[in-house]
Image (tube, rainbow, N blue to C red):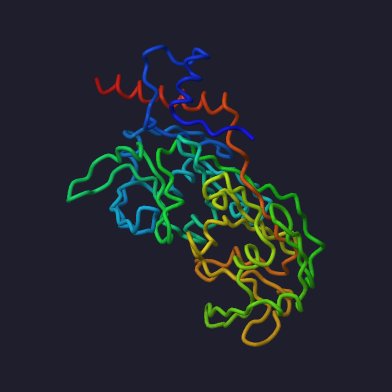
Length: 347
């Protein structure tokens, strides 16, 4: 496993490799961030280019190790930033955007996953921002120690997904290669991947677990908590040495026809996004019929694209590890160059 580099370590490496001249300052906080990965137009942002985008001001409250926090941030839509970079999707795959996620990385290597399904206005419709200013005592000013930009996660219980000193937004496709089982009514699904115990569930096994109900669109669904099934029944494989390691993971749900949708564990975790998603096995007191013995129900989504019917597989993944030291150093060096260029333009 690669060591997560702190800014001082990065500066030492850049000096040693000649990527940074002696006496030069490494941007700390970083001078901006990059949008990379599965996009048609990779982009770099500094403060000036962020301020040129449509602005949103929001009030947020969340818990932290220092106690309850309340902030007023100004920024631009995280979904808008990613979408404007041109998300690469496969037109032959229905709702392929739901198989994507964005990995937000801070200058200290801290990372968290956001599923594009939770961000898309057509589905989860989260109003997460890339914030660049905070209003304190009626005065709006840059973020200071939190960097040129930080990600917000309004509605989250705790602030673990508020990535400060943002250096990268990396759009990625799901790691699943699971296909369908030919369609038709499912009778069993399995849970595999980054879990402590791979397990399989049929109707009886689901009915033996703690029961919850959710009423959506006039229908009452009965089933089990999606989060509890993963965290308590199966168990998520977490690295205690990685801060909030659960936020770097996601789960892919697959139906018998091969239809898939990805969920970040951060959106499901009661300590963070706290979404009430469930794996239903009854609707209005009867079986699900053509939707299989189990169906993923996502109550707060605007559309039902993430409601995976005839469930056959749940796969838990870790986002790719922190980049190799040389890659990370080059990325920070590039962002430092943004700051130098911006200063030259201002002068």
